[in-house]
Image 1 (cartoon, helix red, strand yellow):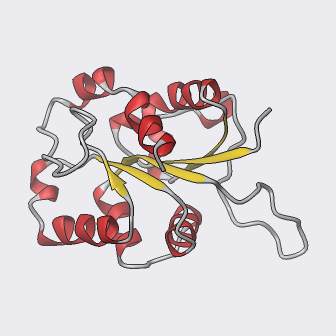
Image 2 (cartoon, rainbow, N blue to C red):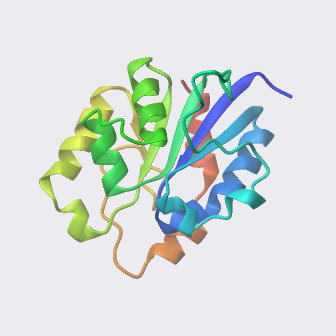
Length: 177
């Protein structure tokens, strides 16, 4: 077991169905993964079948922390709603609390935005990506793994993008931090 902790935050898009692959890949690279799903991501993954601790709600005041602080965070996929809320500092859900706290603590973070052209065309999308990049988040294109500008996901291509996605893209970026 390693002492490097990786929080994998999943949002509601097809790429969330590859969360189990992210768990395996991160373990193979020496990380101890913890999964933090948004409510919407539960349509894409069976959290009960995941081979990692799943953190999905705030602890009771009298309870100890359920997980150590992360050494890194991977947001795969980062949807329109979560990415915009995170960039604006809205911490009104458990995953957003963890994302905002990691950003404030300057924890190395990689995000893989996944939004269709109609949502990605909204002005808040590019502004939010810019804010997160400015804060040090490494933003990865879900089609190529490249760092930089993220093209919108074309309608009807989610399954193909999901199948071609490589968790190595995310983990390589975390290894270089």
